[in-house]
Image (cartoon, rainbow, N blue to C red; front, side):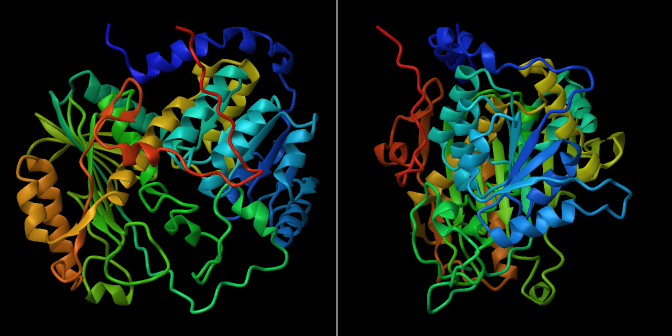
Length: 497
């Protein structure tokens, strides 16, 4: 019998079955019209969509920035222009006070990446169901602990990869997996999203007094910041974020893995790229190609934060495209290919000559009627994990693909482009992606000989254990050092014998 990561997790959970069964007291039975009481934790950025999506269920909001917290509460208490009634909510600056409350059934987490797993795991321990933004983790190990928490505490946990609730993409996946275009040959995910420099200050950024910076840092190292903005640009600091591959790109990584039908990590990963075209306070790649060497078919992921050319940097438009895909997924098969768009509402099938032969569509949705939020609420009521469109295990796997690509980069060496090209000759598809990346950089007047590219470590993984077999340093990067008291508990079952 082939042992997959999914099977291994199921086996591990079985070892804690007695604990799980004892937690039935947390599984509330909901009436047909009974309200699921939700608190949103993290109100900046994506948090606004959570507030809209769960507006009718809201009982509390939480953010470590008191100014934002009170502004949001005041806004919710005012009738909206769209005719929605005002909602009166409690406010908490510390997420732990939310988790202590017995009158909250579920939490929705839209905080920075480095606190996703911590808050979600502690919420599960407190008997709450969880909707958590992507990526579900900041590193592979804590994603594993989150899956264990969902099983051990019998919690409904949904990942915020909304494409999983798109019937258009679902139908296209079924079409490809049923052989509609012949054998699947490879998948390319693209994240060509404009990313300007985040700047670099001479003196540390002054944190506003309205922010509890200790809470904001949570498990991450509490260090001075030299970027211009605290918010959002944390994505490009590896202490708190995962770069654009773990930000926007995790959506496309998830769709790519969905088309492949893979339920494990890949046995091989290599990254090539770097933070190129400018120098700033960021340390994550803005230009990157990652190969995930699945045995069935390779998955290539491309990140480009610079626009099409140096001239385009005046407006940061247009961006490049990969056969029409700017932020999306291309699925190449023997008899044609699929393009899955980023807005979840459309997939197109093309013949080998590029003629459109089939289209799947759904109405585009806004945050207030996002079916992904509604899917979570339905699963909370039914208590059936299989009702979730993006159950936490799926979120963990797609997040982990981003993490291990970044691990390859972190362990890489800066090498001239010619040497990299020679090393990639045995990986023809990957080599082609690298050549296209080099052309893109040349158009942006990035001297890839003088400004060397990082050639990542070639990492081999045992997909039954999710440990690297050829690089101990890479295994060390599967987790992080956690700052007290924001430590994620080790929930890994320890099997006897």
